[in-house]
Length: 465
Image (cartoon, rainbow, N blue to C red; front, side, top):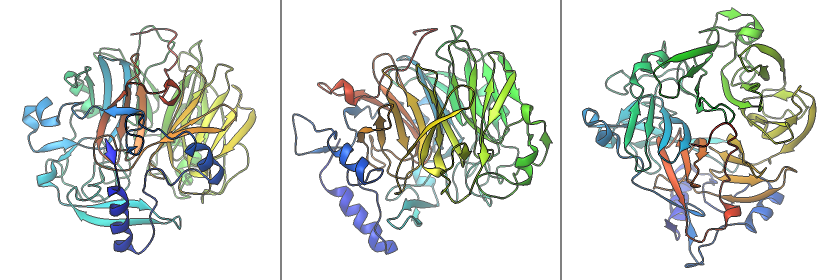
């Protein structure tokens, strides 16, 4: 997909509408000045058309993956994807997708807000009809998917959303293989009017688990649920349902306000809206905790609590002290067993040893940055998706040097709008889950693409298909 100049025109229209200069274009914005210079040297250029800028970088998007929701589920005519939070590729023919319920299709959509980051670090909300311009935000604003960023959600079940098809599985052609509808009610928000209560935040399989158990992070209910690979059995639940830590009930780490969860329990049995998981080869795993708590929690292979580290700093995103967090939103581990933690609201990556000793940090820049997912490739490069700052993919070496970036905010196929999780299959195909755009996407490597510019293969030690 090519962009010749339309994105700049759209950006100008938005600027005129809100009276500020927005940072929504593809290549002109990166994470800090030095980072921008590094990234420009690595921008993808199509060898066949070197003057054209490619929205989807070294990939071509498959616009027919997956099939439309109403095609996959004929009974869902008039409905479409809600906020898509999770995606995991077990293999090219088995891709897990999680979403936060369904939303009315374009013809039935009402009003929504488009949220844009401005050059002044502000957030501008532009009200548009339906999915006009950059579209209805599937995650934020009126008539969005339930259980997300509005304390005054006014949607009506069955009219403005449906809590259905939360976990589904697709083949390489985008056809439905499985729908785990037997578990829909398990993840349903107890009260959709309350911020984020219920959902599958991310979906994962440990690279070291030969049984390929499926881990579903339900941050709204404060638990992690582990299923058999076929989805027929719920094997284990970690955490205590609808129960948070004592300090989190008094004041959360990211807002300074009490958690919406009032019931409290022991620190070693509860979470504060946990977000992500990473494993060591022996099955030991680490949980980033989270949106409201400010820590990393370490468990043994059976889910027994071992330790936790992390303190609460300033809530304005200016905290630079080691081991202080604000929105702990992702985690990855390198082959030296170093733990990389996405300290999202502080715009940095903190690095620790496996026992919580601080080793280093990378500051990602003063501009609008919002790292949603981090991913350690087997070749030992750290990839990141920026969800609502610059809307890009970034590749770093393990010294914190930015090597390459690509991505453009657009609702067209191949654009990026709130990439919350991404995954790579054995053929090198890249899959994305968009909370704002409300869609999963599949990106196929372009013929002749430099392998160094493609998101690398993950570690697969306990299984390979």
